[in-house]
Length: 331
Image (cartoon, rainbow, N blue to C red; front, side):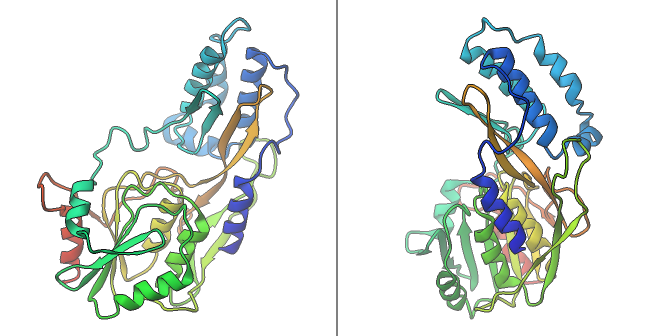
């Protein structure tokens, strides 16, 4: 697992590291550079060809006819962003000073299954805060942790104190709905508190060449138990379509553990570790470079299903997903 984390951190800082054919700083040159960078280094071509028929060469011809050297930066950006959306990948982004190209259909068009109003109803105003975690004991003696991002570090001392606070609770709910990811180190640190022996949680591959199928062998990834306070009782992890990237990885890891159940909606996915490069005009492109799999060697790029599918409901005071999780502790 440490190898995953170290590679992820390195990848986030890796800019303009990919060797590509030098292109002129023209609309045509930038379009060609963008297509080539993805063609040689994007990691899900074979999988997405299988899933929905993606043909990257056909995509090139489809968008090439929309490019000419008289077009404006804004027009070029629109064409390039449309082309990248064919990959259906929230980790693929194009950035320049005026805009940020993104594909968010992995969560748009689906029920949110989360309500800020209901969150305030369950947390109240006297909840506790430890780094990026907000938490309290619900009135049926069940611990509730709201973790909306893995972008900020969570200290080992924070986790020791939080889990000790819940020591007498019957079970623990970890609500990661709307968690768009962040740092894998943070996700791993939290997940390690629920592992009691070295556990296989997935696999990773690395690009070995410029061909769409040029990858290393699958490398097993293990989660090591924390040497600090660990939780031994049942756990429910609450999910929705906006669980992505490092949060999706956390859900995948937790799903391997026998005492953990995922409750809510299908996660959003995002299992490719991102890397970045620059076009001749200085625009930055980010893309998925290293595919990650679950413990059964299945892709999780498009997310994973929950153990119990539940919608939030329409009540102004009751969150059906939280209530379903609470019910599971009585079975």
